[in-house]
Amino acid sequence: QVQLVESGGGLVQPGGSLRLSCAASGNIFRLFAMGWYRQVAGNQREKAATITPDGGTFTYADSVKGRFTISRDNAKNTLYLQMNSLKPEDTGLYYCNTDPSFRGYWGQGTQVTVSS
Image (cartoon, rainbow, N blue to C red; front, side):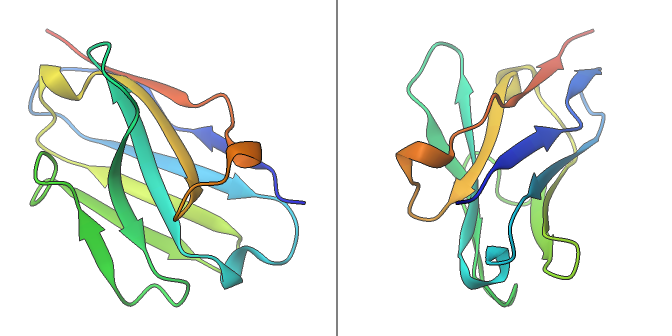
């Protein structure tokens, strides 16, 4: 059983930065590819970034490429998302989950609001 708890969201001005964290319970975090997902502008939840179990390979949605960086610390069972050059259209709820996602692992998410 894995529980995922997101944190680090908040209100930031356009062009600003935030760092999201996802703390995973259990000792099998290191075995999973992980992803950050987001639900923005009333759209369906989308995959923003993924990372392999060893942290060596990443993928990014075109909408965040060059601005967001996904990383992980397997010793701390934690997934991160560094978000730079934030835009109003990045506003939404951000979640972490495995990649591919597992229905039972969705948490509450963390709200990111980009506004002046």
